[in-house]
Length: 203
Image (tube, rainbow, N blue to C red; front, side, top):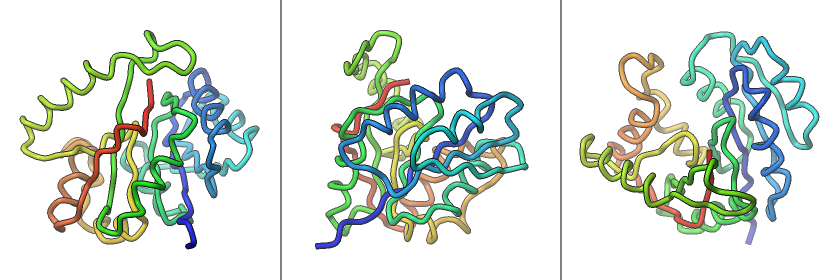
């Protein structure tokens, strides 16, 4: 059976100090992505130049300032069947992409989200502090009345899901956070978001 391809999208604004660790973690994946799209959102440092040193990375520019504009540009540009979204400071576990691809074997899964840890207390391949992050997420979900929430530091969705919800999304971060906006759009279409605990990341 043909396996779906994966594009990783990373919005970037002046992240030359943190981006290398994120890209290095992607370079160590047990499952290689089709591409890694780094969206340069008007960085004035060396973020774009650093990104281009890594294999599979394609840098695209988004002149309109804002995380939502950058995310949207990255998802629109992506060629993979599964779109994995992380932040420039996200460090992912070695089997991160493999775990996500396995989650989408179920045709009913339209989107998915993983677990986060705290980098400052997580040396090497450790992912400590997930209990604290999960507690904060639980409170946030109770407050918003929706979940699982598609936090940008660790989430994934089908390209077809993106095409479905894109017209519904707000571009202005001042109206609604991008995490909540994309979550509501997916759920309002009666599409399933799956929590994938083994998709581990830290930031």
